[in-house]
Length: 130
Image (cartoon, rainbow, N blue to C red):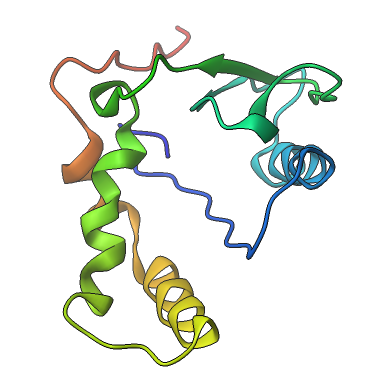
């Protein structure tokens, strides 16, 4: 989630591991154009598979780890109410049904919807080269 532009990249998966996360980082780097010309700071919590030990980090990606419980530092935390909206107060019979509904909701969220929830007045603005 890029707070000022609303640019978002979503990945939904049913399980995670360090090897899977390494592949996910590589895919993220390719899809976002990270590399020599574009650097991306990826803010992560301290989940075990996020740990940098033996984790290959693609060029153009810098991992920054949050302290425990810090939603004010992770703009994506403010998106959960938007993602949860279609499943509130509903009984879903299967995990597949839940995954389908959440995936569809993520596809519907665009920059105009995301930006008011993440573009905080105190967030640093991108510097445009002159």
